[in-house]
Image 1 (cartoon, rainbow, N blue to C red):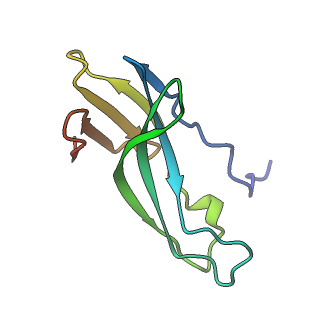
Image 2: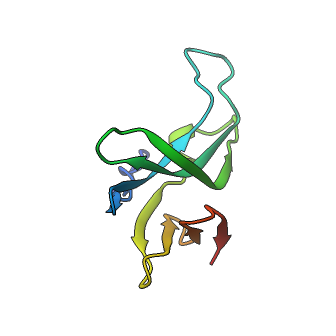
Length: 114
């Protein structure tokens, strides 16, 4: 059997809700709107939003993604696949699909590689 040429759908982290705030991981890049060439970078963020209004409270960048223009972008995207609160509920833990781990301080929004 031949290996699949398409990437399997990535596992994406489920949002975490705590004390009226929803923490969600997302990838962001400059809007393309048919631009050629496409932007060569993207970034992964954790975004904190008010549960009731949906208003963004803050965002913290976890990492950058640099794309090789000779490869398909979807094969190069790196998603956050797990979010959870630590035991004291003061920090949010994130892990990307390459196994890299990050810790976000919920008070200062500082990000550290773990």
